[in-house]
Image 1 (cartoon, one colour):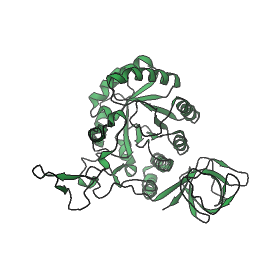
Image 2 (image 1 turned 180 degrees about the horizontal axis):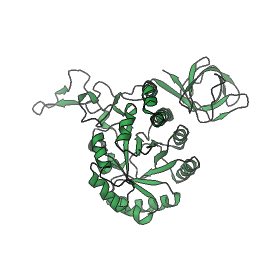
Image 3 (image 1 turned 30 degrees about the horizontal axis):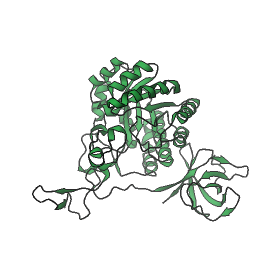
Image 4 (image 1 turned 180 degrees about the vertical axis):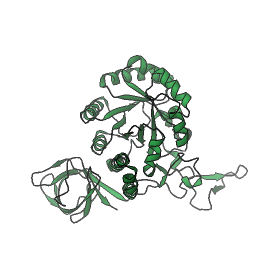
Length: 411
């Protein structure tokens, strides 16, 4: 059994570095154009070059999404964009459109191509088709069960890689091919501008009673009938490995550094624990469950992996996230006197007890002793987002804190 790759999303360079620090084997990002997350910060050519350099210096691979469903007017721009990627040299491009695939093979044949889940990859014939054209990896459709993925593994060449989502948001539409966004707002999900209408509240209206809106459930607040729970397979890593999945993909290029740190670190430890022994993995299930719940989520489901989802995989009464921890910032530098420099993200106070997320999987409990602004003025609280601060923390001398580590607080 090959040890699977842990593939983590990043919407900007800061989050990318967090993913690398906490154990990602590979990072996937989007450029300013031709990816399916137009509202993420994304990477321009200069930051993409820096991302490639940083990842490769740390032994991590970098993949770039070029996975829109292209229209005629997109193709000339795509051609120029892939010329730029040829110069930037990511490890792979993630593509769904056959026309873009052909352009990529023509212009940059030295860069691997991974076939996006948007291409609806549901059977081993599809995998072998893309293999025959030169693709090195195919991302499985989210609608597949583990037994179906195992069947694909048994019927494709050993060097053809399977990538599958293991964590993150689920889509109401087949492999993310949503038409609702375009219908309601004119923003095309398949061009990277999804408005996430699956998270909105809906009523039903009987054809003969126009204007009379009925809740789908017996609830005066309506229902979020399309609102899926989030996928989480942290408690089922052995089954994912047994199915023959080569890359464990986490969804979330619009997520925060705290989300990326928590998910990356937890899956990293779970995968490594499994390869130490099944008993080691099983003994830490409670830890994985607790840590994965410390980032924002919508309740969890195993998606399609153990059969078709039921009504229990949806959330009907709310579209809000569960948020148990607040992101305070990450350590950008450590002063000679031990004070850590952060760019503050959320309010905290002198005297608060916070956590420092160590890279070994442990959490250092620390008390805020003092807060200083960039002019050396002492403060009792840090109420201003994006303010540069130096924070003195009281923690155990055994806790080896370092640059890049995330600070968070319960609540």
